[in-house]
Length: 180
Image 1 (cartoon, rainbow, N blue to C red):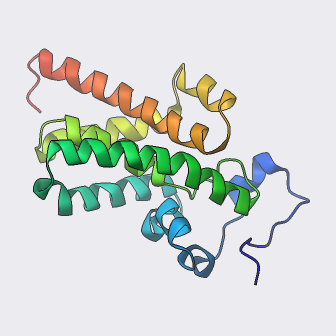
Image 2 (image 1 turned 60 degrees about the vertical axis):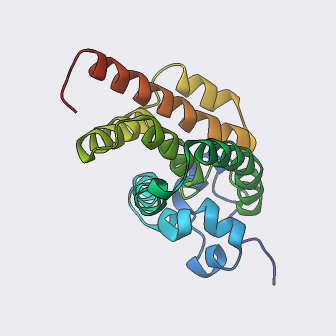
């Protein structure tokens, strides 16, 4: 059996990432695909990126308190590098440049945010809303970087930039004394 899901080549690649979804059995058949699809959250619709970010938050809540800052930093660096490779691999298998079901990028970027914002439900909730806003609207230069960088690196970098915007807004709010 092929590792590639069926692909309708009559649909332009730019449209395919929004319309062609792999079967859950294809996603769950390979550990790398399972990670890239956020433990299956990336196959949920609508809003797979939001579902993936929520899955990342759930995983964070379950494990972060028992992990040192050094280990989190090392894990995030590894997760980013791994994501650059694996997201590119899964995209190639799908025949789609940046499939919206690949949510590892949202998870890694949001873990970075969660690591650096205050550990309160209010802060994390605001960070979640800001991150999803920046990830979906892609303000400059995120949109330009997303258009220029391809492969797994492009998939990962635009979400790291959205995380950067989120962290900047959170830092300004904290500096201004906004209770979050």
